[in-house]
Length: 371
Image (cartoon, rainbow, N blue to C red; front, side, top):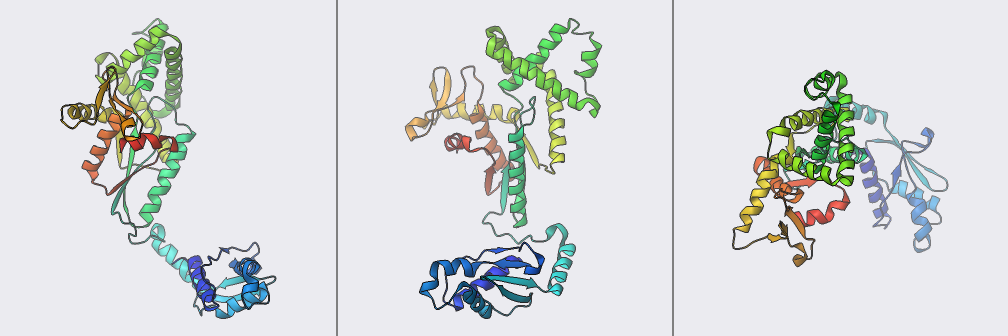
């Protein structure tokens, strides 16, 4: 037991001897070292509320009685009362020395426990960046939360699988590819432009990796603007999106190269924030399996999905949820279909007792439909 928790436990025992129950003492480090290692104002806070109901003259009197009732310990040098009713605790030097020896001996394992959770194996899925786009503060927040959850679970003896589901297909990718193709076309030297060929279309060392990512960001921004403002560009981007799913030779090699740029960029960030993963999942990996699951269900007598305006949806409103598209009008699987296949894959690969998805609260409705 941590020493702070031990003092609180012993404080509760002392309070119980005085007939005081149902109180949660607060223990803090004093602002000045000459006031001890820990201090509590329990006598002050309790006396203000209940002094007239108990046989105590003042908060100072109550503090003295708590000290008198405090159990004998092997970890405290002394306990003192300070006006108007603080109780200060000094730890024994040899006790602190023994604890320091334990910390040095156990290293990173210090404070870890034998498994206390009901789950032997938990998968924590976090990070979730999209290739061809920059990391933003939301991703950093997600990684920080996910990493914290992982470490807390591991400290309690739980086997944790670190999973990262990264978006490597979808309309945002097609917008970036469109922007790249536009830059090639406008260069006027598609095949012979040495600068483009050497600096952007081939694998390189990390010397200009930041330049690669900046280039992708500009291409995505250009593609996004064109998609919103130019009907012809929008049509072309949607065709590129389909070609990526179909692994069409016209764009697939470019997609693979630029995808790798993003993945290398992500790895640098994970390393910088001291995070890592056991399994990387990708949207492109579960797109076709997700579509297959939906189409197979349509053949069954008990159907979960139904056709609607050229798409395939889950009619969630029938169940007090939201309607959700699982295969869109052009026959491509949506996030919902992919996530369904992802869950199946995760459970089949690792057989976790529980999967924790680290996502924002705005996705609550989405996951209520999905699971």
